[in-house]
Image (cartoon, rainbow, N blue to C red; front, top):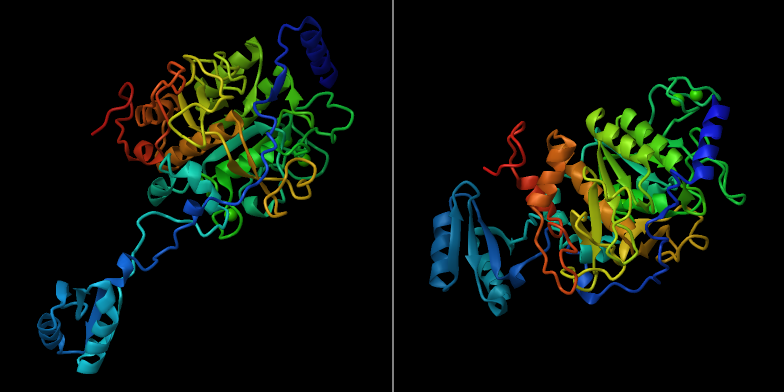
Amino acid sequence: MMGMVRNLRAVACATALALLAATAATTLHDTAPAPPPASAAAPAKAAPAGSLTTLTVRARFGQLDAVTWLAASRGYDVARRSDDLNALQVKVSPDAVQRAVTDFARSGAVLYSEPSYRMAATDAPADPLYARQQDYLVPVNAPKAWDIEQGDPSVIVAVLDTGADLGHPDLAGRFWTNPSEIQNGLDDDANGCVDDLHGCAFVDSPQPLCSPASGGQVDDDRGHGTFVAGVIAANGDGAGMVGVARNVTVMPVKVLDCSGTGNSFAFAEGIIYAAKSGAKVLNVSLAGSGDAAVVREAVRRANDEFGALVVAASGNSGETKVAYPARYDTVLAVGAASGADPDTRAPFSAYGPEVDVVAVGERIVGTVPRGGCRVFLPCINNSPYALADGTSFSAPQVTGLAALILSHRPMSPAQVIDAIKYSATPLPDGNTTGWAGAGRIDMLGALRLRYRIGAPGVTRN
Ligand SMILES: [Ca+2]
Ligand SMILES: [Ca+2]
Ligand SMILES: [Ca+2]
């Protein structure tokens, strides 16, 4: 059986009919980490706001009228009064705060007075690298979207890439586990992959220096897939970074070897494996140079048979030529906007009418395999995180959005695409006509849409 498969691959390669020449859509530009801009400080949750000009004044029992009178007689503006709280909200000028607090304390009618604390409506993750992530996550309204949805573990996102570091601390608990498989050298669930406990490798004849990758060996020997996984689903655990869809489940499907290349046959196998195994969104941060029928068919089956959405990077050629499989109609093709100006195209982003949407693709924070800091990417502060550019890293943000949408309510792949495009923020052409498709994704807008399931397209109500 394996021999036959190998033969088929050999034929495909020899005739070059289906040679995908897949390369990672970005080979992880070595962007040196830089200190975060001053404007990027993470807002603290429930931080004091309004320069302490708003005070909560809690009266002793039965003293609320007396305190109200006191406040008025001293010229403080009583903004609100709550008999339930037995308290007033009082506004004072910043320089009068201390005097007001003293006045109330001396009156004997006040239990305490304190500054009003802002209750942040917007989720501000405590993960320290979030300060660097805001530059690209704020323009797509990710923080506001997280008030609505942070992802559900039941939604499985496949990352078709170079594998993943299953032991990365910021991805702990995020990886899919195959309930029907044990580590015993056998294909217990007869799905064609031996010991696929957390994913499967489809890498035939990897380069000599690459790690062996067969069956469930999805270890990441390049760093690209781990990075993408972090963009999608790094834990909101107060450490490191936070993913766009922090609570969803990631299934690593290794289709690229340590040189970042693979072929169309293995890639198509990976697509079917992912869809069959229950992944509802497939992230494809790789670019093929040709239209492989076997990939086209696999994408169609993922959509139609398994209800899985394929999200793919437009490619990094910087030219008007969108890569495969992003070119296909039913694939959500993602280009990259500039980090410095998210209204303009990142210079490397491939464009053309097939681009559906864009997200920022520069200075994206991602997870690096442990021990890979010197091998793959210059890490931030020697911790397993790095910054990188590419449509490889704008695509997983859109994948994360699709996963948030599906966590919120079930939808077909076509409906998810409609929702993401319909809610996108249109962008100016600049000197590249239509480079951004429907525009830059708006995560809040996409989650707020209301849908009539079954109706064609998306309707807002
Ligand atoms: Ca198996
Ligand atoms: Ca097994
Ligand atoms: Ca984290």
